[in-house]
Image 1 (cartoon, rainbow, N blue to C red):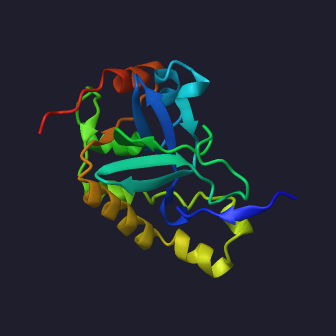
Image 2 (image 1 turned 90 degrees about the vertical axis):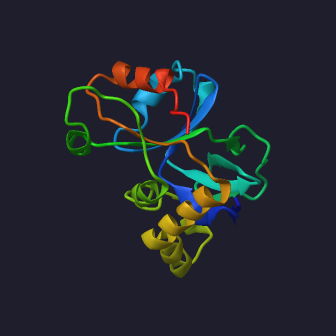
Length: 191
């Protein structure tokens, strides 16, 4: 059996994907988060950086993310493409059809800016995704890691510590290609 060790970033793992879209790194959470992003990243496996388990870390005033299921092989290589940290340019939350209906009164669908407090709450809508953590953490530690209030606080702290501003809401769209085009054409508002 493979030996595992605890991830030092287990307290900051979120149910999210990381994709490189037009040279920008997007951390994408929420409803239907993967397929439109895959299309927007030109269906290039090299641009599909993480699925479902993204650990966040702060370095200086930058926010980084990587694939991290909570426990890593004892002899993993931090510089390997699998566990490499990528500087995040955007954090997006994909709205459900119902949320999209509430947010968009018109038929025009666009990516909207989101404030940090709301994004921290949305970041913990889905359960703690670190599926390998159970092999190295006690049930009590898993319970603490999975606590949504602690996770939301930790997310907000990382956003505030870095001054990260590119937080956005992405509407649900039945046509995946149209949603993919939203990612590719998105230009943030100048603050």
